[in-house]
Length: 99
Image (tube, rainbow, N blue to C red; front, side, top):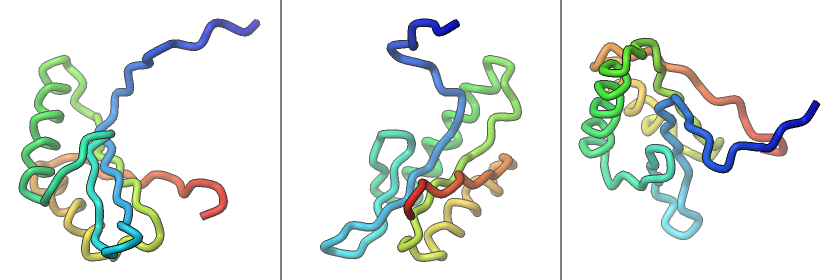
């Protein structure tokens, strides 16, 4: 039996998306859909989200790193270090088909 899809499903995750700008080759950081200008801003927002989940009794929400292949490893490692410094679990997103 098929149901009606949810219009705005609530995702219980902290997902960091890393891509590369095609023109400047700079790494683009997003926390969910929100652009993050630098690692400090990203770290503060990850920590705030983690604290919000903990207040709701959800202590095992991981930081999911979703990085496309052209992203430099140093940028992926920076996100890992941010999560690790806050004691959060780290997971990697599976690659999208065709990448």
